[in-house]
Each structure stands twice: as C-alpha cells, then as structure tokens.
Length: 361
Ligand SMILES: *Cc1c(COP(=O)(O)O)cnc(C)c1O
Image (tube, helix red, strand yellow):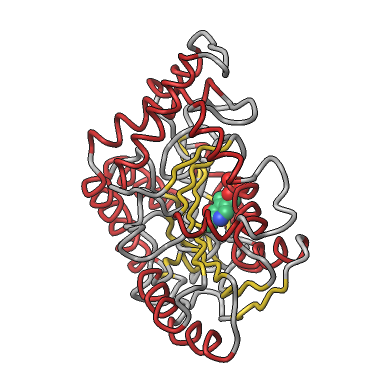
C-alpha cells in the first residue's frame, strides 16, 4: 500500500502525524481522575467551539449509532424525514427498523430541501421530530438548515429538529441555539480530521426532557444515561476509546486555535478551487447555490471511465471516490475538508489535469 496517498474522500480524511501520534500515549483507566479531567476538558472545548450551553457528548461509535440513538431517544412515535440523498434515505430505514412511524418527503437527488415543503407537511400533520441531513455527502449538497429550522419553529414549535451534520460540522457553518437545533451529531473522521471511531453530539435541554417520556431508548445510546454519568463522574457509562480521545483533545486545541471562522473560510477556498476546475472541465452535480464547502460532487460530462481515473490518481498519490449508488460512474466526488489546505487541493487539481491530458480524455 502506498503510504503517501493523500485522502480527498468524503471520509475518512487526512489526519496529521502529530494527531495520529497522540493515540500512542500510555493508556489511563476510564474510571480514573485523569480520564475525568480529559473528558471534562473535551466536553468544555466542544461547548466553547460553538459557544453553546447545550449538552455535549462523545460516543465511541461511528455516527450511524448516535443518529440511530437520536431516533430512539427523541422520537416517540412519528418522524418526518426529507430525503434527497443516500444518507437521508438511510435515516428513513433506521427509523423504520426502530419501529417508528416515518414520513419520507422525497425530493430529487441534487436538489435542496425546500423549507416550504417541510412547513406544508407540518401544517397537515404533527411529528415529534424532523430529521435533516445538513450536508448530503452522496450529492455534495448543503441543505438550507437554518431556513428549514425556521420553518419548523414557526409552524410546529414543539417538533424537535434532529440533524445529521456528519460531513458538515466544522466545515459548513452551523449554529445551535440561534437556529433552534435540538440534536446534532458528527463522526470525527470527516471535518474533525481524526481517525474514525468517535462521534460528537450536541443536545438541547428540551430534547433531553422530551427523551424521558420515550420508551425503549436502549442502553448504549441512551442520552439520559450519558448525561447522568457525566454529571456525577465526568465519565462515560461504558468504556470509551481513550486513545482516540487523546487525539480528539489535541485536535480540539488545534481547531480552537485556528478558530471556526478561519476553518470555514479555508473550506470555502478549497471548495471554490474545485468548483472552478469542475465548471471548466465538467459540471457540478447539485443545483447551484447549494454546493457543499466540504465535498464536491462532479458530473462526469466527458464520459470518462471513473474507475480508471480514480486508479490513475491513486498512483499519483491522491484518493478521490466514485459517485454514490445510483450516481456511480455518472459522477465522482472530491472531499476537501479537515486539515487539508488550498495548496493540497491545487496539487490534486494538477494531478487530475495531468491524467486527463495523458489519457486523451
Ligand atoms: C459519513 C456519513 C455518515 C455515516 O457516518 P458513519 O460515521 O460512517 O456512521 C452519515 N451521514 C453523512 C452525511 C455522512 O457523510
């Protein structure tokens, strides 16, 4: 395997050596005071990052577990899910598998969720929660979450707003209290630029209150248990990935030092480089105005053999991916998030141009 392949994937993303190395620190016990201070520090930094008073949690799991946990903890009976990509589709299946009543609002892939569609559905029927994917990784599209949340708040103030911000958090601007989001989660192998294995979640007080009346919330992803354990011991109820938490703690220091605004700006710059290139050579897949700052989904208008293109780039030290599911071959995707820089992106663009030229595509 070529150790020097740079990851421009929708996840996992590049991890700096100094962050990787933190995982090799000697272990501490998860019931020790050292762990309590580590976890308390992490929770404090997570809150500081978004300037929020929400509860912050770190689960040892990929985000799917925690988002399924949202469905189990924050939906009594009915949930509304606008679907415009593979991840929103996945939450419909997860809600069904957990015995919830789901209404999927289907929208063409590549088109953004219209707040008015959500409002209209909420006017005709009541839902415990609306679940929204902020940044659809399958189509490279950022949904207008702020406007959707506004519409929900206006029409059905007691409906909780649950958000999959997995590939967006720290790369796509997000506000918690100001937008009235109730629960949001992101796994750390995307814009947090860490190895996979942890998920960060923020939950409002009112969602925590609501969860107390929900049955069959389960054990591992039970937010009340998580909060109770945190309040009493500054620990997690079950054994966490301590090594990865060392890395998360270090990475949070780095991110706080960079500042969220600078991080957002860097992501915008990287996205804009890829978008400019894509518009010259191909076309962007999602509708204009909603292009994601973290993942570009590019329409394969030249009909190039995407598999071969990806392989040739890998030989040059760059990893990108094919389109997702039904978009395979018709699109390809470039992830530009985490600790990658505009210079890294320029390197990838040069390599893509070289390959296209060399193969006469
Ligand atoms: C990657 C991703 C997921 C899945 O996250 P896991 O950490 O693999 O469970 C969910 N939603 C979106 C939008 C993603 O990009």
